[in-house]
Length: 111
Image (tube, rainbow, N blue to C red; front, top):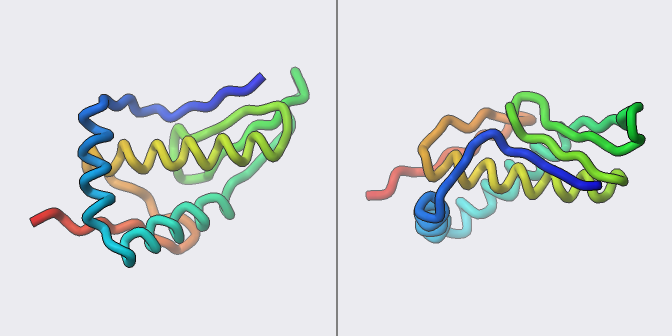
């Protein structure tokens, strides 16, 4: 059993816009994105669900990003994937992205 959730819904057009924005980030922006994901994953909290013994993971302060899997490694992997998708969708819609672990993700506006 394995599932994950991001509360936002996006279209292919949203993802195309994110690809363009990521392409414009350059090495410094990619490093900032990597630092943000690492900081968020260090903040992640996990627990074993008593009903079925699966693992549940979430990142405090990043609402709607969670994962559920049969083991801890799968749960971590899924949580990181959901976080990446949530960031991409948030960027495409220019939604605020909270600071995590003292790291901010600030994307310059395209000119």
